[in-house]
Amino acid sequence: MNKLGFYPGCSLEGTSREYAESVLATAELFGVELAQVPDWNCCGATAAHNLNRALSLALPARILAKALDAGMKEIVVPCAACYNRLSVTQHELFLDEKLRRETEEAVGLPLSDKVEILNVVQFVERYIEGQLPEKVTQPFGSDVACYYGCLLVRPHDVLQFDRQEDPQAMDRVMRLLGANPIDWPFKTECCGASLSIGRTELVAKLSGRIVREAEERGAGAIIVGCPMCHSNLDMRRPQINKYLGARSKIPTLYLTQAIALACGLDKKQSGTRRNFVKVDWNALRNS
Amino acid sequence: MSRNINPHATVDPECLTPAPEPHGRHSAHFSASSLASQASATVGVDSARCYQCGKCSAGCPLADEMDFTSSAVLRMLQTEDPAADRELLTSQTIWLCASCEMCISRCPMQVDIPKLMDFLRQRSLYEGLANRDARRNIVAFHRSFLDVIRLTGRSYEIGLVVDYKVRSGKLLQDLTVAPAMFLKGKLALIPEMVRDRRGIKRIFKKTDE
Ligand code: SF4
Ligand code: SF4
Image 1: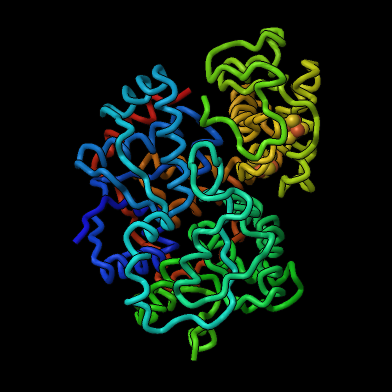
Image 2 (image 1 turned 180 degrees about the vertical axis):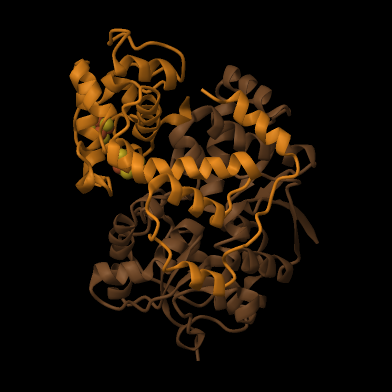
């Protein structure tokens, strides 16, 4: 049994509960134990780095310090936004000694750059991918559109993860699940992110273009690794449909939901019962 | 520094002008009081490196909505005209930028526009110049978000939405999705809290600008 650190972040405890459910169910199925970073806090998200730089470094720094203190060498961070904030913080603090000392002083705990931060795809590549051939019992049969969004791949200099214009890692995993990932130009376009509440109509437009493109190219589902992308593409669907002037039916699945379904887990374990746009597994799987 | 070179860049930035110092140096090109030199000094983004190719604006998903596109922002900074600086600090652009990082990923000169946008937002709040419309929606939302974290250490949707409604005055917006979210088990009625709330308070206090 592999034991890893786990930072769920706020979304996974609230609006993206299905993501947490599918991550935990998948981890268990593949023999990985995920232990939460003790007494973790919010990473500060967009609000902190928009309004207060020092705070936007100190909040993620506390999380990293808590993980270090608990002896965690790797932490799995399924939320792409949290993954991005934690990675950028670690990068900036270890480029700039003065900034690091100031941040340690604010947090009141020592920091190190030894905690490895894994996004959901890296977690799957490292601990799940190798066992997929034996564990997939109900393969996909449909086309899917892998949508990476912004925060998994950019800034490339810091994250050093996959190609920034045409990433492939999720496509590869989906192929192992039997799906056919389509080639499309919206893989890393922005969904509108945190403008969701302040300027919902802009999110409807940006996310609407993504949904339309995926549907027109014949994909049966959009596959994501970010709760912000998921809620914009799934929960904001009524606004998207209004923008498109059409009723789009394509569901949005987290990568871990797709793995869970292909490995025979049900709606409850995969969390797909909580998706707003109905996930019709019979239409997606190979039958 | 080798990690900071963009492998997809069409021009090697180091051939043209010296790479910017990461932090804490004034750019030699600007006078100390301009916004451009403050950006260079506080966050290490040197606007002089921009040669106006326009690739950033071409790829920006929000360019259509902005009053000044990203390349226009750079040009305005380069002029060091106090009137242009003021226009930037009162613009919608700086609040519409979604920090998607598309611009810097395509910029041949590695100008860190997202970091520059963060700097401009904070400067505009500090000087009390933030755009009126943005203050009522986007800034109100960010402020509400931080209010909730200050109190509980974590974000909490119901608290956030209530706080936001008070700040923005938009009492009806988003009420339509709440019942459905509740039925799907996506709205917690009781906030999850960090136990060490003194630690969180300390962070907010020490980073208060
Ligand atoms: S892409 Fe870079 S160099 Fe080109 S206009 Fe934008 S900031 Fe300037
Ligand atoms: S980070 Fe901001 S300015 Fe740059 S492309 Fe994205 S929205 Fe446009």
